[in-house]
Image 1 (cartoon, rainbow, N blue to C red):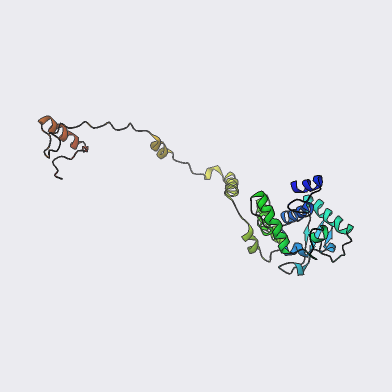
Image 2 (image 1 turned 135 degrees about the vertical axis):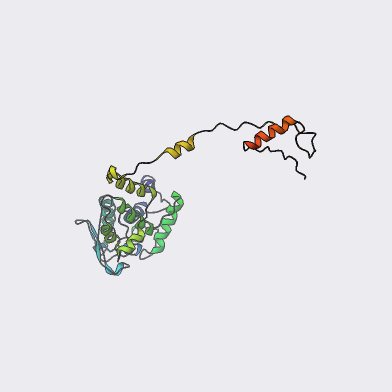
Length: 257
């Protein structure tokens, strides 16, 4: 959107030009999750603005199945602009609609191909700092649809034109926030009588703070380096009392090195 405004105001080419066209391509991938080859295969006759649909023909899709792709509200203005430009340039019914070479004099090819789209996404990735690809939008669309209230897997399968639900499930990505929300929804519906009471006594016992141990007094040993034990009867009595209470002094008594 910013690049489009720069081109409109300054009249100069942006790094992704013409910006209005590439914005339309980007939004089509974003809102529909269409396959790259399917977008390149869209012809002028495949767009029906009155019914707000895009006809994906069998020869242009991976599954070789023809289906109608709805045009959501936010995408309509972009498709309408591409169609208006195509009509002003006298596109034939069978002409490739998304063909940047027809909309800008800076391109010389006959038809638009995968390389031109991938080049646009490489430039866009460099600008925003996040890698984006057309196929990535398919995964995002499937995941977003399953986050909605109805979570209709069949709608996601139809929009992505998958052959099986198993394939659609591989596109759906969950996140911890979504999983937590589902578990909390389930917990709210569980009868309170079935919820076990939690015993917090262990946690309370763990959180009790004990007084730090007092430092042990030193025994009246003989001179440093001596290997004999306490030198006075009082010291023997003190040592015996400690041992009877399960306390062992750190100083080795009567041990030879």
